[in-house]
Length: 86
Image 1: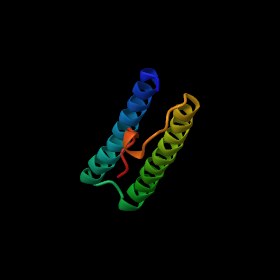
Image 2: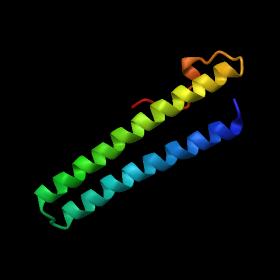
Image 3: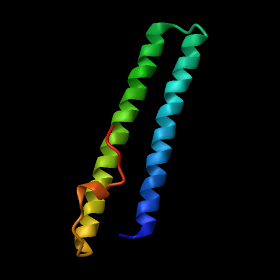
Image 4: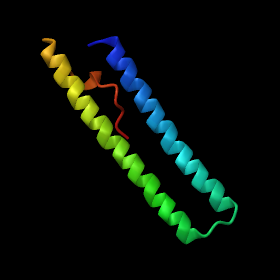
């Protein structure tokens, strides 16, 4: 598979992980500053939705990368996936 594709996916994974961590950190900062817990729960739900959406996006990306590998005449192996399941 093209190293550009692998590199691009690795960049997306890193960006999504950082975004999710930054959401969580910001919510914790707001909590420590005494913000209303009911409002914070809305933010928590939004952050969880973003994390779930990230997982779905990465699952589809991995699926299409596997199809790309098959199209190139190679057989993908599960352990070759660069997407780490949590």
